[in-house]
Image (tube, rainbow, N blue to C red; front, side, top):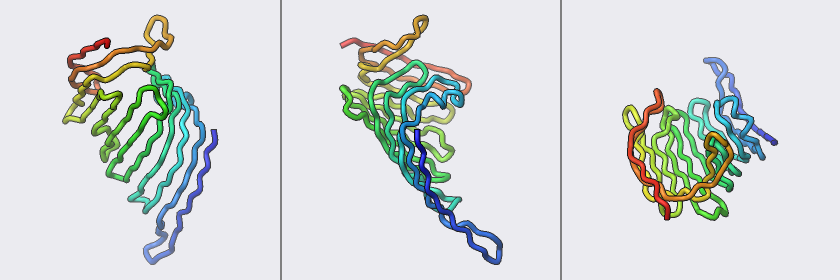
Length: 193
């Protein structure tokens, strides 16, 4: 893995004291192994992340604009053997937006998300072969719905074997969940074409 960072932040002496100017920072991250983040997340992670972008603006109003690619992502017991690329634009105190697409995958897919001012998820949409899963923030929980979402080529590692195996089928349903404490409610239909 390689991280290259170039930044400038001028300071000015004024009557009120030392004042910071506008930050301009460019960075490049190549082939960062996600498994090194597992200790911080408490989950098993895998895959490689590459990114480049810019952070700029006054320190109180920073804007982030980055492009990235993710190869063979794995989170806990879910894995995709494919490459994803995307963009993230974020604003201090205002949240941000994420757009991702699978690259050269047998099953084209995309992800779109809006992050709120407190950096919590406002909405998430995952599209795959005409099907979709969406998650929307409510007052105390999240609502979710799935419509003909294709599971083909997604890999799961389920107990007791804990070996990754491909799954197939279409997922449909709706419900809600709360993250803390974790609670789930809904209806789920798994069909096999």
